[in-house]
Image 1 (cartoon, helix red, strand yellow):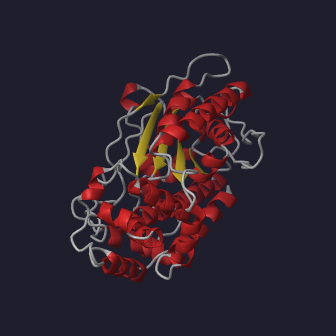
Image 2 (image 1 turned 90 degrees about the vertical axis):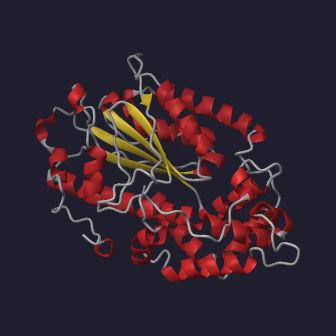
Image 3 (image 1 turned 180 degrees about the vertical axis):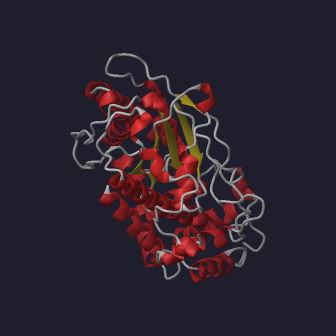
Length: 394
């Protein structure tokens, strides 16, 4: 099925997605997990779930991007591994060594290759999802531990995203700080195209069909951003041979952030593409559940905004733990995990170079500059609208 015509059709799966709902799999019935997100309240409320599935029979996948939670993903893994079941037994989840998604893309399907064993946590940065959603569902549910007689009842995906405007400002502040945490800003040309995905797949060619059909970004948007970047980089008096890092520290912030945003645009476009694909995946799974009169969803997705983790770290962690474990872990255990993370975050945000939020006074001004920018404003606003829609749907 061509990407331009991708739908949530349930009739063309390589391995019939409907087989995920057979009644002879020995599973307990589970209500659909829905997230009751009220992160402005200091009273975390439980997710609406009756799931009694054993967490060790799920595979857990955490997806994040640059400046959407590298440090957070490590904290999530720690908290998921720390939890105990309501009967006081340990869950014993294991973190797996995930391949770099860009190099593990399946050249046939154009999606990252997954090997998600039950009882494991896999963290993937900047995942590549350009395949049909039925193929994606089949890949996620494949059980590489089947020969070990370990049952896999489903996959829970924790998708860490961020408002594109706050992401871009954080990205600018992070790379412009002294000393810079990233050495590549001394050598990289921010206006050059990204390296190919997989063997030789152009990232713009992969991204455009999905983004254009959903009115997020077009080829013209990418071209405009590239042209704008080239008009700024090594063209200003005194900066003709300067590095990217020198530009970030020499140009006025409202100009420097345009360079760093051009450099980061493919990461935000990739995030938007994954949001679209996971939304289609959820629709496919829900359709099949309806067909089979099942309340159990073998693939479940929860999207969490980094902005919410910054504003309400404890409440946000509680929602993650509730999504991951439901009633298998007690309310008290989840609340203790949430409190532990909040204390850790409060300490980390003052000492870690990865945390830039709240450390600069020009954040709101730079976000406004980007919103009003004739090149970046519209595409970033469309990504923002998509993100807000998905969070509202949850």
